[in-house]
Length: 502
Image 1 (tube, rainbow, N blue to C red):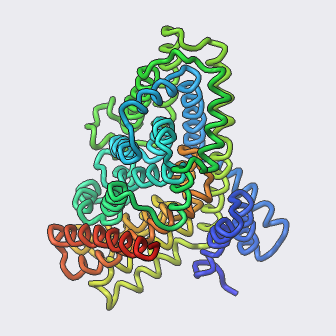
Image 2 (image 1 turned 90 degrees about the vertical axis):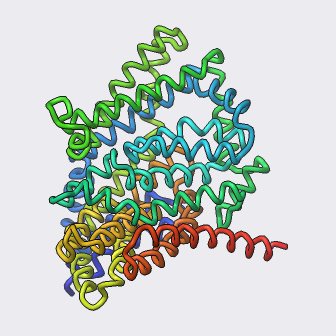
Image 3 (image 1 turned 30 degrees about the vertical axis):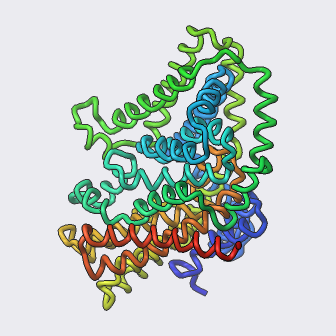
């Protein structure tokens, strides 16, 4: 039976995702997905399967410079977070926040605001927002599941509508002629990113949760969230060895170092210091290398600062490095398996299958094509766990059907980006989803299961919005309609669920 470039090429990631959601265990689920893909690829030859899993899979993805850069970045961030805690900066910030941020609504809005401000890169966003806001959300009895959702919803969705970001650079690279201009034109039609923010903020103000998230929110409010209690116990034990005389500046300054250095690291890799303007520098940047270099410099500056301040001994600083690495091992292991699963899936021809699917949909469904591309993009991103890979496949296909100058072409490109972010948001094997779990110190499957109903609700409104956009290709008309539909959906859901409760 022919497997290559057929629907069977999407079977391995679907196996991994279904197993993860059923068993609540992500490591074995991902590994079984990898093995199933290798078995299909090798036609059930045991020797070829083993080689494909390890040599062509795990060893290959770990040998890629971009992946190594992300792993080093994670390790350095783990060390940074450990230093922030040992210096007493996190404790001081938590005390300051308890005086100034006195309710869950303010804490969640502060988390959203920080997530919006850190728009440079989604990896950087996930781990920085998590490390800074955990003390604040814990103080206000916000569940780690909700924190992970807030982090995830202000990572990729913000980056995909931020002109100065690694995502803008990636999209520009996939559209060879006028890529950056195309990205700017597509922003008002990127309904998933915009509506995610609308939904998230409206639910915070309405104090409304639904689905599995409501269970964790209620548990946190009653101080029964197992993740919250577990981390509080760990924090209490760790605080005995930490400096209790730290100041808020001991947390803020290292984070500022991190932000500035990572920005400079990215534009450095894009040739800014060789004469490129800042927009071209971001467009040409290598995010993984830039973040690795930036985080390394910021770690060095942080160590110097702490030694000058004498908030932490040199011995404790050095011990923070391996401790930071250990704290990131679960995220690194999941990422390694997720990258391997993506590689195995691509080897089965998933790119060609989706490419043929989009091209066949283009004839006869022109005005519904944005909605069709959105659904295909969601499915591919969900199955492969990569948004960049998804719009890397679909944007060139879309531009071959519609010219860049066409408004419908811009809407289709935007639908592709929105669907990629949506599928990435939902997928248990997405690196952004994994890092959001790590940043919030939330169980990964818990994060996925609590976030999924929210993401799917937003996706449904987006699908309707793209049908309208195909018929009325005007952002000034369609965007307000989509925002009103999103707000109405939240209000109606709240009314129905509260009525059923009573």
